[in-house]
Length: 59
Length: 371
Image (spheres, each protein chain N blue to C red):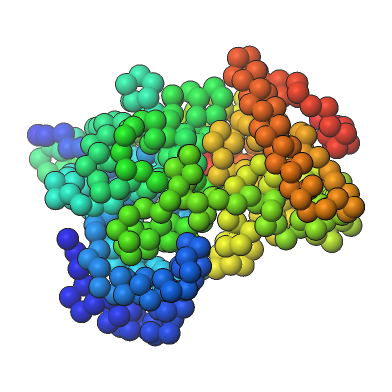
């Protein structure tokens, strides 16, 4: 049976892809992937800690 | 093309908006766009009769904060209704279809042409753009196709403008704004973090009324919204001129609403209409709420304006005895100097990590904070 992909998942904040394995009309396995990466932890490294909230609230 | 079978006024009336409210909205738009009052009627006529182009809203490396700012008006305004009547064919955060059905809405709109595209979020370029994919395509691929075929592209927010915080040092994913990812398109930038929904609405109203995008500065930002410096329209400016500064958070001068320059306010180096337009139906804005401006409408502000609580270097303080012309002349020079210094600081930072941030200025206010 086919593996279905639903991408983009809408009505959420962010980017998400779902893949599901369907056998005999039943989902037997599923995978989710977040399809966007920015690297906030890397950007925050070494900055003035008082600035952290400004970055972190924009996750 | 989508049009209203019964006209805009009918739709507005159906939703309880009177002709008077509609005209008030049109005059507010004319004021925001810095147009003479004789244009109010032209705007009203255009909005009532013009065919509304379809609109697609693309989200890439974003936090959806710009969408939130735009969608979450504290109460439904005439502006919302005018824009509701735009046909929003694609917006991942709010649309009903998902997966292939969603992608088809976008493809159909692109095929038909003549649409506006709003872009929110930066576009990653490292590793062939794999850091953001939608429906199996990279953000770069989608933006290139959709923006090139659009009647016009409107970027909202700092990320779609120049890359935003994803592009801050060390820019892990090679994030850039639309102007760099897809050069040569018809583009207008509405930076801010988030941008003010009033400016987004006014830009669309300008397009619907005149069939063109408003005049811009060298960064593609409309002059009506980014032509004036925060510092020059700030309600606390009199305190700056009188040398009355907040020295510590929560001190009596902070409570009294004195100038936040020494606490790191970037108003003297930032161009935006926040002081006059304000946010949340004109209720308040960052400086009005007691926090300094962080400079969110300027290119590279996450690096050039930070640390955000460090005072801008070299903006000269002038006592009350200085006249207006002298203040203006010295301030203009001071801001150029501040930008040059920040540019150098940020170039140094870009070369060496971890970041050493205090190379270029030893400011007395800084010492008090023990940083």
